[in-house]
Amino acid sequence: MPRVLIPATLLSAVLLSGCTAATTPEPAASAESDGEVTLYAGRDEELIAPLIEQFTADTGIEVEVRYAGTSELTALLLEEGDRTPADVFLSQDAGALGAVADAGLTSPVPADLADLIPAGFTSQDDSWIGVTGRARVIAYDAETLDESDVPDSVRDFTEEEWAGRVGFPPGNASFQSFITALRVLDGDEAAEEWASAMAANDPVITESNGATLDLVNAGQLDVALINHYYWYQRAAEQGEDAMRAQLKFLPGDPGGIVNVTGAAILAGAEGDPDALALVEYLVSEAGQQYFVEQTFEYPLLPGIEAPEGLPALDSLVNPELDLSDLESVAESQELLARAGLL
Image 1 (tube, rainbow, N blue to C red):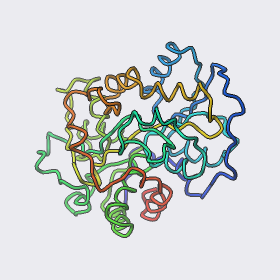
Image 2: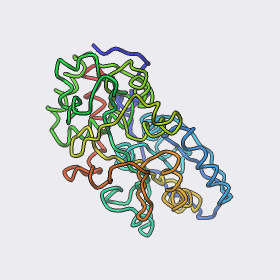
Image 3: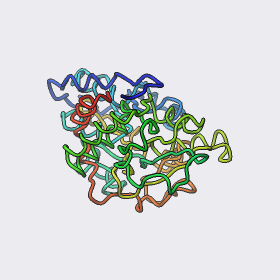
Image 4: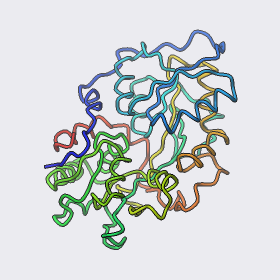
């Protein structure tokens, strides 16, 4: 059975209840700027708040932000439907954006803006736009393991030798998108078998990617399934020499998918110049450079260099996976619940 060192979030349970929007929101009646925009931000406040402050300083537009987990905000948007006060949704993964778009809750991103981001890293129908890229990786305890000791695929962590040695946050939207990718690439049956086998292999269940990495860095866990940038953030804070944890990238493996953060203008804010200005800022040179320097994510705007030391983004992309296929997050949550991981 899983060992819970940090309580797993229960927020994703709302999605499992099958809440959906009752109606499609009406577009905003006015295209006049009122100098204000409401953002639902499914990313950590400490990471995003400085960028929002920078946006306000540069544009004069005030932003009212509701911070919460991406899974929680997705469920909230589906529940609120046309009653939502949100103008823009900033998500930590493509699957949540797809779920909101499938419910008819987004408005089209203008073509001239959508075309800034290369195909494969944004929506195919312009219902949302990719903002940054992040790779799923394995963080391992380099004091007890060599990189060659770590499997080249997360599929191998169901083996008995890894019992009690692997940690991950199943309530996290990025982990749930990994499960969705596993379903897409290997099939639902294989994905469910993997989740059930992992649950039986005594995993360490955590609340977040950062908490899982910290366990590895403290020598309390051998392996963590996380997003790459958490390691780079800790290394910037503590110094690379203090990092007991090291990373293994998994190009082509479901456990090494490249997902994106992204933003959607909600249907009720269609034509709102303030909402559009915020989304434009996220993919502007200033916004993209912020993500490179402060969050160590891959920029998606061509011409902006990735953080130093990262593998080339193209070398990690799985050509068999389309990010538009990650919208079935509710099914992945149900699978995790059946396996006893949620």
